[in-house]
Image 1 (tube, rainbow, N blue to C red):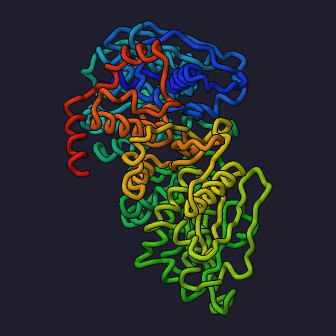
Image 2 (cartoon, rainbow, N blue to C red):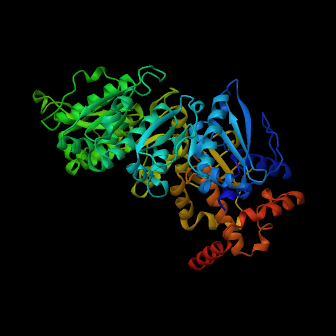
Length: 626
């Protein structure tokens, strides 16, 4: 099942769609038409929908390809194919992500196709060979394996099982977090496993490798106290000055027992917020704090740590904060400080976790009781531009709830022409605010996630922050949402959009797909992070459009492709409930195919009949519920 699901790449979906459109006589001419390739063994489950979207790497495809862009192929065995694919295709996706190459597996021909620059292809081939070699034993690493993407770390034998985790889960979680590829290996092909240390190979970017390395060392130090001191110099000097800025390095700080627990925070929350806000790699190995990154990133991390501990002694004030480019200040009325802070700093902590920032109130003793609104304090926010703006708007929304008009008095609508990061404003009328907010803010979060922008409601004003495309997209989503209250919405030129997937749903399936008062659409939106609704096209025909800035992938649970799969499953479920034989006739005329295409679809049908007993059970139970 995993192999059948994970083989087809997004570009093949577009090829199938193109052929279906030509069969219907409604193919639209587009520049740069794609050449059809011979059909190989691939799943065609999503072929019913006409996707106007880019592939997951669509953004990269628009960029100019490197001069040494090419294609390499690897012949593999059947067992290797299952190993390189992994559960649900995740291993193949991981190799592609770490190597930054495009990888396609042809199951029938047992060929692995790798596309990218010469270095990307070399790395992808190397990673694939390493993954497949694990099937038969330890991977042998030779001197030519290091292309500036390898860190070798010695792990004491007694800590190997602890670092690996049950069924390799700990290593897999580190790989996911830091976008790396990790496995134990033999260097030079010599030696068995009867030795004091094992070699752990970590492949990836300089930042990803360092993050994974320090996380492993932190785990090893827990199991073998004092081990870090033995290899301290090797760790601190690794990759020094080897980044683009040539300032990469590692700084350290030593804690006492009580200081360590404070710097770590509840479930590591304090460490994570320092890491995200400073953009440095922050990790604690024993009683040592290690800050890895560029010179500027390490400097920020040390400053943030210093201010964190100064808060234990009293109020902190950051001198010349106006001249810094890593902070934002918000005036908070004195009567709102407790509301914004929360019990034992819980509310601030949630915002810090959500936006990856560091926040604290700062004041000088002589400033108390002064400021905007007859009494306020400055809340300073440290972090990247986007994170700071998101946290700032969240604070403004909270203050506006307690003190209406504090931030919105005299505010007008605004649409910026700036292509880079900026903020637009839209003023709601009448009861538009509650409709746009949704139950517990679900509608706002849905639009924000699908658009890739920051959307926050401060009083009756919607603040939309992001780059030009994100703001424009979010504004369109908001206006379409409000237009749905008055009736059907017409959305044209979907084929020219990079953030939309268009699906034609059979008439007898529309009610089943949307659910009672749109409940099924809302469920699928929440699961996949998309925005979906039925809209009319230029000719007045109704179809389902899935909007999201993230195209998704075959294995990702988020994005347009994931939503498309869920919709197709619901359509198939409904057609089976109505009597499987009527499936073809019940589809909308615009989606019918000619006979040859139907025969081709029938030949491919086994790939769509995975787990039939489970699906029959689910469809029967669903019918009963209805």
